[in-house]
Image (cartoon, rainbow, N blue to C red; front, side):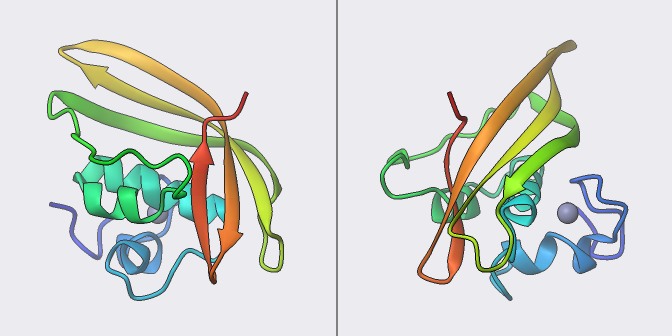
Length: 128
Ligand SMILES: [Zn+2]
């Protein structure tokens, strides 16, 4: 369990309650595509599959999501973003996320696409 005052798992340098926690708790939706990306990474870290499904675009969302418990997330690095700011309707976030399964490290490099609809950001897919 992540304490509210501890550093946010997304690596922003902010405390959890000043960063991703308000998004995950439903207090307010992520204001930018990058903030949504960070909050979704944090949701993977804390195992919040409900939040992941709720922020997945309806066109690409899986019916259910089973998180792999043996997988431990090690860190997130945002490499670049395009658009995805307030008043944009789309954006991309390029990131590298490092995880470990049974002692083996994996590096996920994605250029995710996001869409802003109904006053909130949604994750579409990992890009092309
Ligand atoms: Zn965060």
